[in-house]
Image 1 (cartoon, rainbow, N blue to C red):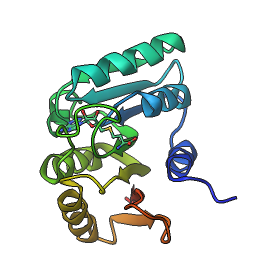
Image 2 (image 1 turned 90 degrees about the vertical axis):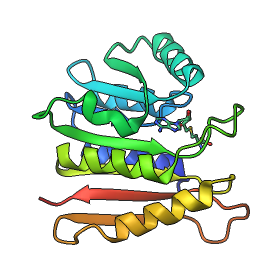
Image 3 (image 1 turned 30 degrees about the vertical axis):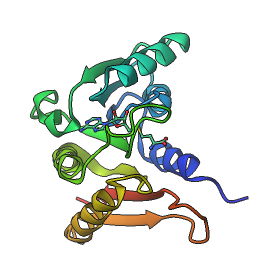
Length: 187
Ligand code: SAH
């Protein structure tokens, strides 16, 4: 069977992140991606987990605690400010974004094109050669279409010699299914 979007997102990162690397979950939400990244990078690695919502940081902390994972720093701030938390010379092994709103929570707190682009741009500067930023684009909610359009425009404009951009998604699903944008740094 074809794998679902979230499994593909994880497969892409698992294939490109090495144990011991420094990685970013830009929208930690309920913590599933943070937990995954924490396991992939291991005791010698480190995860920075961002979310603007207190509830998301709490949920993620709890999940990581239950799984006895200790290599995560939790940051309640916009991912637009990632540069405030990453040293100039720090290399980033990979990153993930899950866009939209926190499931079962306030649907008015959503990721937005401008801040998402700022965050991606910052991470691209630090990303290792061959590294990936995987963005799971949810766009069925209010405000989702604007963010999707802004992101597609932005990633389409990335220089082909420097970056490879993949779009992966199902084409016959109802209700605006999420899709993946994966940006790989080539040099
Ligand atoms: N739509 C996904 C989950 C997305 S969670 C699903 O259905 O599984 C998205 C998270 O991004 C939310 O927890 C929200 O608080 C967070 N968020 C929104 N804007 C943000 C920003 N500027 N910086 C960091 N996190 C943000």
